[in-house]
Structure formats: C-alpha cells, structure tokens
Image 1: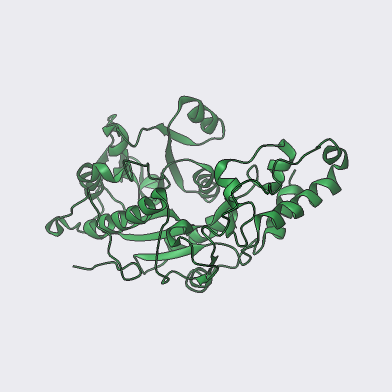
Image 2: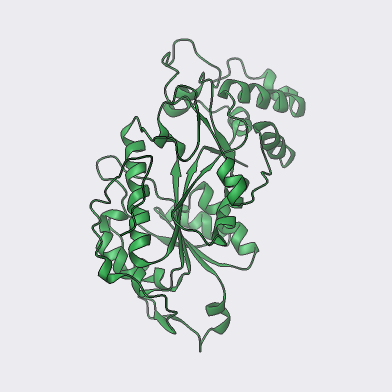
Length: 349
C-alpha cells in the first residue's frame, strides 16, 4: 500500500477507511446515467464524451474564476453552491450550478459526478465535523468508482504549516497547524489523497496563500470602505503574509491537469510574502491617484494597523516557497508580487 508521508507524520483518513480490493480499473463507461434520467453516452452525445468535463465542489471565488476560464477553453463545467440566491447569481453568469449541502449530500447531485472526468474540491472543513464530503466516504467512493473520473484536485491552505518563526517553508517543511481549522485542513488533505489512491486516480493538493483578485483585494476594501474581519485583523501587522492572485491559481490548477505524476502537494503563492500593512499602503496610493476625491472622504481608514488590536502578531509567521510549483508545473506567474496584481485590478476598474 502506498502511503503519503506529510513531513514525517501520517494523518489517518478517518472517517474514511478504504479497502484496496475495490481499486478502480481504468475503464471508460460507454453509458452513464444521471439520477434525473439523462445520460452522457458515446452514441447520443459523441462530442460531449470526447470533451473534458470538470465538476467543482464549492463555487466560491476560486471555483467561479476557474469555471469561467475552463468554459472559455471549451470544457464542460458544472459545480455546486449552498443557496438559491447564489445559484441564481451564478446562473446569470452562464454557469451550470447545483444547489448542494455537503453535510447532507443529495444522491441526484452525487450521481451526476459519474459523468465528469475531473473534480476540483473547494469546500472548506467545518469545526466539529471536518471535511463535510469525506464524512460520507463510502457513498463518495462508490459513486466515483462507477464513473469516469481521471483526476482530483483539493484546495488547501498554507495555514497547515503554522507559525514557523519567519522561516522559508517548502512542501517538505514539517506541518504544525495551530488552530482547529488548519488541523482539519491537513486531515482533509490526507483523506482526499487516500480516496484518490483507493479508486486509482491522480490527485494533487494545492496549499493556497491569501487569495485576491478582481472584486476581492485591498483596492476593493479601500473603495468599499469595508471594516476588516477578525481573521484580517490578525494579519494586519504580520511581517510576512503569503498571497496569490486568482489568475495564478488558475494557472497552477490547469497545468496540473497535464502532469503525469500524482499525489503531489504544491504551495501556490507569489514571490513576495509582504506585510499586509505595506500592501494596503500601496493599494491606497493606487486608489488616491485614480480617485483622489474618494480618499479625502475617508477620515479613519478601517484597514490601518490599530495598536490595540491583536498585539500577538507573530502567529503564523512564515515565508512560503513556490519553487516546486514554478519548476514542476512550469508556471511563470502573471502577478509575481502584490504590486502587479493590484495594478491589474485597478486598471480593469
């Protein structure tokens, strides 16, 4: 049995326990049935059968961007969200979306997975539960083994490294998650790798830094004059904060699709783990140059570092290396630093 070793420590896939006598044989089913009675067959839809098909569990910020880009490249793409309002918004953007509760997954949506060649998992773990999909491991395994899945990607977080005292960390650096969510992230990584191994498909784990892009950036926070969330306040005065533009996440995900290797873990961050305060100062300068009147109306910026907020700022300090991603996936970052990323965002406004 192949075992994935994460920095010298093995995390069980509980509650998933896999029996390798069920290992998937690589076949291409000629006729797959959706729960609603529709099908994707070679005889009825030859074009559909020959095309790559991506299913995205969790149409969040990254999932939506990924879906749009794949659609532009001719992929068949579907995904899930958790509210009717969100589904309506996504459908207006031309996306095919299923209303889905990962804690109580509907078999109609689960069976739909059988007609997809690729799966992106972008549903975060839940405190007290863990990964909501993996808790239904037997059902999930049964569905995927009956389908045509070839590759699985799981979106994780660099939070699994914990506080590294400002050290430069790569994928082989010992993981030491501090909070409960980070611990659950690490357990979920192992669970999805075990699942993929059990059914005989390729899998990759992507540990993402702080995600930003159009509509979700320091520039947007300043323009909307939004207060910081508690997690953002924790990062205000940190010396190092690794981040990545959503377009570069897409680059990494797309490149991995063509990788022959499996069970690899990649840090997906830019080249510049800069302090959050520095990033906001640069964003403020960009906004001031483009809309000077807007800045004059802001008396007390809500994103500034408050000396009374979270003085223990060393928590989570690390500089995350992206060397493996750039070398193995042949990635040339579109936005190697926050300056490039924020400039592109404001240029599009």
